[in-house]
Image (tube, rainbow over all chains, first blue to last red; front, top):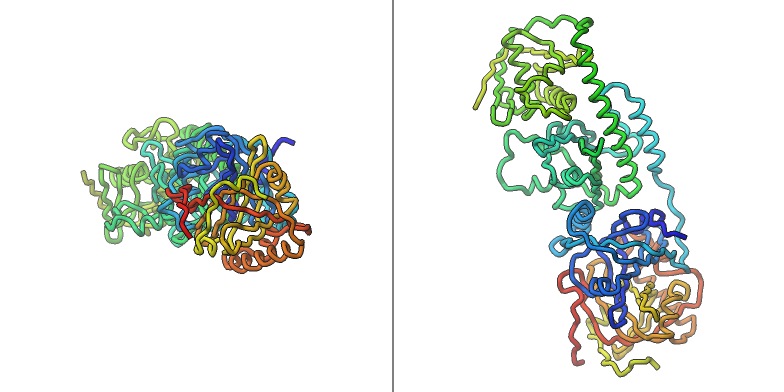
Length: 449
Length: 169
């Protein structure tokens, strides 16, 4: 029978390390433990290469090894006969293993010792269930495929547009996967940064928090278009711990704190992809060790693929609506009279990064900052409260990218930041491709070079 | 008689012997005529009083290939690992299957299980699970007399794989 690594891959993710046997050029067997074995596909796995040692010498010479892997739930054990193919010292597989190994190293107090030099890729030639063992029955557990079906149905049923899809996805993760702490981030490709647009399970939503491409599990998942999963806490990949240990300097005033768990043990970041392009990242975490398995990773990858398609369609539908809305202004109620009462709100905009402050409180920067600045300027100058997505899209001062401008995402981000940070400014959708600005106090607009 | 007895036999230090007695996680590896490796878990160990040999217990089905290999070639590698500290030692040498009363091999394996399970339970591994991993279906367990020739430091780190110099007892 053709070996099927899928059937035994939980053993590779086991709390029990694998052992590996090789034979030297002069015929002497060698046996040692393996720091990390990574499932690649149904016929391949990769072993972490950290040190030049006898195992490596033997493998390079004879290109054959036998791995002993044990399922830490049932005790079932397997001998996998492996043919060495190649070593990868960069790229997606390498990055994935590097992250996994960082978690394992930290968990086993080996952080100073483990450094991944390469991912040694092997073909699985044969899998033998070790005879003479009496494994425990598999404990009934969560069924990720059933959860995926329910979550997928929820997304497919969502007809509320871009923003509703974000909430539907996070609701589905909580309801069907029991994932209590999750974030959705969108990629701003031009700036090489991801920004949080929706979250669940945190005291502060963290909407607007940014992660650089390549930074931590989220940044690596987006940069390499791969899922990254860590089973144990590691400061190498912890946003919250890294920030706490940080440089000792106070955070920049235009930085929104990442909302993640301080005690996250398990982390899973999957890219949201459409048409081969990374749109964003779906991120889940848990204070429990080994909370997410291969099946969860599979399920979330499938869900993220569906979400990517749905978000892209919602964005296109919104653009279509905009075109039609130009000729159809009916149904839009007249704007309320401008507020004149109350102390004026000072709005400052820094031209360098389009960061906007409400009195002394940071609101947002980048494209979303440029948008609110434009809206407030029109309000102040012309008394306008009603705007169309289309005019934003066509406004060169907003510096939206021509392709994949992600305007919907930026408007959601802006609306949510306003809802969280201001008691007198808000924006709301008023119809297809249109929205209204509400201003509750007089404004004083100040621009800083 | 173990073939290759002309090789220098290493005498384990008292400290190494105590480490091996552990209890530890134990694997044994051999190779066949085609130089293909195999490995199995050892289910018990006893160190000779002179510290120049180990008696290793294996399950006849789990280690069937390894036992066949030893009939044709005495080369054996043993890895001894402390799960809680990751300290790891590898011994290489020659081995031969020996006949022991089933009650004696069973007693060695049972003692290993009891001490290992007690040690590893606080790390989250239940006794029934440990029973599966270092136990097996009912069988007369096999015994292997092993004479180490060389010892290697195998604890993860840049020193892993280094040969530990022989000492004069």
